[in-house]
Length: 150
Image (cartoon, rainbow, N blue to C red; front, side, top):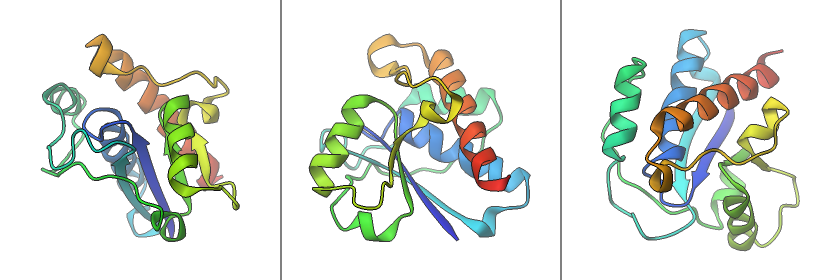
């Protein structure tokens, strides 16, 4: 089983969107039993909060199922429990390295690196543009899954 943790700053916009998109992608391919998918934050700012209403609206628009959840913070011990940590932007990557101390097994990656475009996933917290974030995340998750099933 491959265990993937999506990570962003607050765990209410981008990382839960990626979590639910990836869960749908693996489910649609009959691969749910082969993956464990979760998401977390590098900060404590939104701990306990559900996903952002804009994320919910976007997931609804694209018929991606989701459930109520509470934002959680990434912790050092997560490193031993997951195979891959997928950050949404360069700051997330830097903060994961700070939390983990070292990435001895090269488990920390940036989502859009899988698309061949290493830019950051658009952050709707600042832009308000959840559609742009959806495009980045759906392309990134498709490319990430392709790497694992080819």
